Every structure is written in structure tokens, then in C-alpha cells.
Amino acid sequence: MRSITTKRKKKSISTRKKDQTKTKFRERKSFKVTVVLVLLFGILFVFSTYAWFSSSLNVQIRTFNIVVDRTSGLYISLDGINFDSAVEINLDTVIRELRQTYPNHTNQWSTNGLTPVSSNGITNSNSPVFNMFQSNGVLYFKRDVNHENGFVSTEQMTENEAKEYSYYIAFDLFFQNITGSPVSDNLYLDSSSSFIMNADANEEMQGLGNSIRFGIVKIGSVDNDAPATTVQNIGCNGQCESIIYEPNSRNHTDLSIERASKYGVTLVNGERFPTYAFKRAGGPVYVKNSVSGSPNIDLNYFDLQETRTEENIEDPLFQIPDGITKTRVYLWIEGQDIDSLETESEGAELTVSINFVKDTMGYNTFDE
Image (cartoon, rainbow, N blue to C red; front, side, top):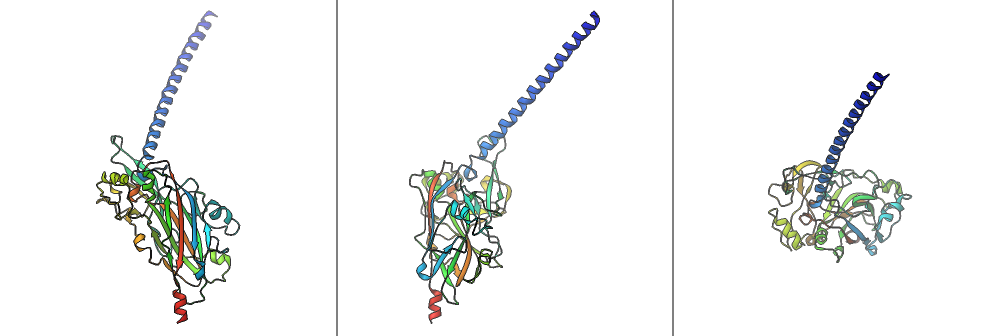
């Protein structure tokens, strides 16, 4: 019996040693996991502190109104059914209130605010939506302690369904032109249109406000008496065309000028600076080869963004015939705009007022 008891004690001691060894192993394993999590958090922190690739740069829409001059027979609608001379653009009007009258719409709203993205508009005449690209962040090598040589990549955003939490705003807008003329009229963006950042916003956000873009795609037209389902499902048929308007092309803050100089870019307030927007998703792209104005900008991923500005706002956007024309409107912060470079702030509010007018080319020609 004594011998058996002794063996049991020895076995118990051996078991405790094994348990202690397993515990130490688990502790070491747990420590390694903790270290990995800390490193991952550090990478995410780097992602969120570089240039327009930050997710914290948001601009809330205070008001967004669109108005047309109905005295010339022009009206607008968000569903192709209910036409008026003005619409207010917000979460309810472009998303929630359309569930009954326009259930298959794919409108986008930025409930958490506009966050910088990049676009060069549509890719071809059969594309009714802009190509919009969002950042996947910036990656630095471990040895790059000063974070001067990062790499960026992007992915293309989709508009297959209505979204309340997008990075940008997009919605269908229908124009009804009542002229009785076989000749189309020219549609213009009136010079009274404005994109104004809250006066209380700091200099960083004022700079970001200079990166605002307004875009519109003309999709197609049908007769005024066409049924709602036909109106709402108008397609390109190889005739889609798009315009990008850059309202603050010559405005640059002192801070934007200073930050641009770090990349060898000379920015002068009062002078327009070209923007090279993303044209396709992918990467990684060397950060210094992604800055608009860089002599080494990677043209595999970027292309010159052709925009209308304050200087040519009097040029017609496109022609609209007698009938109903479907368009798609975009509002976003262009991350590749030089004024978005290395901006980091908590946010601001933006007031948008867009006024459309048309000429009476149809009336004049018809009267002759």
C-alpha cells in the first residue's frame, strides 16, 4: 500500500508540472497574440492619418436644394412622377420617401458625412453611373519610421442598391421640358449655384471645401406622356454623357499651399491646379507618385480630371428635348484634389444650392 501511495504522489507531481508547462505555454501564446493585435492596431492608425485616405474627414450636408426656372417650361423630379420647380435633397427625399413611388432606385446618401473619394466620371457612353473609388489606406514599411514612403491602393464602390451610409451622394434626377418644339434646348448650371463650407470651419476644412465636385450624367429621354416605369428605367443606349463641375478651382488656403510644397508642388491662390483622379482600382501605388502635380504620377492608375469651372460655367451642360430626361447627379469630395492633401480634421457643414436654367432655343427656332 505504501508503494502504491508513493507512486500516486509522484504521478500527481508530474501531472502538476505538465499543467504548469501548459499554462506557461498558453501565457506565451496569449502574449504573442496580444503583440500581434497591437501591431495591427498600429497599422490601422497609420492608415487613418495620411492625406485624403483618412476615414475621419467628413463633411455633413446642412442643406441641399435644387431649383429650376419653370417660367420656361422646365420642371424636376426625384421619381419621374411628381414634378415641381424645386426639390430638397436629404436622406428622406432621396432614399426613404421613394420606396413607394420609385422602389428600384439605387440612390446613395452619406449619413455619416462626405468622405473623400475619387472619380473621373463615366467610362463610356453606355455607363449611367460614375466610377467612384475609395481608399484602402496607406501601407508603410517597418523601417519607414517617418512615414514618408507609403503605398496606396483603392477599390471601386458599387451602386447596385440604395445606400444610406455611402461616402458620397448620388441620385437620379428627372427633367421635364415642355416646349412643344422639335428642337432641343440647352441646359445650364446657373452662376448662382453655390457650394459653401460653414464659415466656422477651420482652415483645414475650408481647404477640403475647395475639393468639392458636382457631377451629372445625362442618360436618355422619352416623351412627356410615357408611363412611370418607362421613365424610371431609361437607359443609355450608347448616348450617355457626363460633366464634372469644380466650383472652387482657384481657391487654395495657406495651409494647402504649405503642404503641397512638401511634395514639390507649387500652389498659388487664385490659379487653377489640375487634378489627376483615379481611373481604376488597384495598387499599391507609391504615395509620391499619386499626388496631383507630381512629375512621376502613375498614369496606369490616374488620369487628368476634365472639369467645368467658374470660368466656363456659362457653357451648356447638354441638350434636353421636349419630354422627360433622366440624369444622375453626384456630389463628392475629390480626394486627389491638391487641397485634400494631408488634411485631418473632425468635420464641417456644407450648404449646397444648385440652380438649373435652359435657353429658349427650341422656342426661337420653332417660331421662325
